[in-house]
Image (cartoon, helix red, strand yellow):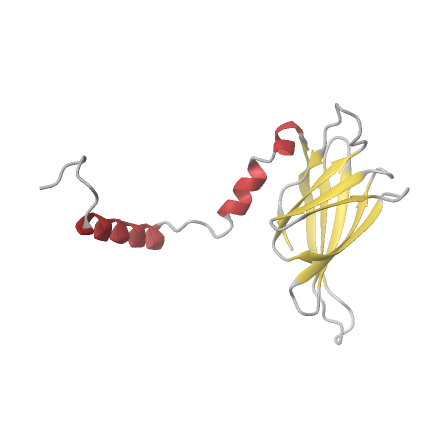
Length: 160
């Protein structure tokens, strides 16, 4: 009989493998857990105003030969609204985002698991980001990111 102070042996390793297989079947780790965890502990999220998802709808193309999937999502907070329309590339690997913020000259960060893209909106609040990898994305919006006390507005994650 072994005790808790004995080195791990082959029986212990076999039991750990069995335990891993059991939990993998009964209560598997969500595939996007790491990505969602990174989002939850982002430093910006600690000081940000959180926008809520107010509308998401699928937009269908009218032309049968151009059957590209497009999705429109609107986020709203107490200080700003953000609407984005996503369009998946023909090969399905990347996406384009056309966005509009209710404040012209705002700065928007588009955050994916692979990269963060920072872009200034035009005077009307419009911006475009092309070639984004598919997957989960969230947005940070600043009225003036150069101000030390500036608080970004952060959105929930959506999947491209």
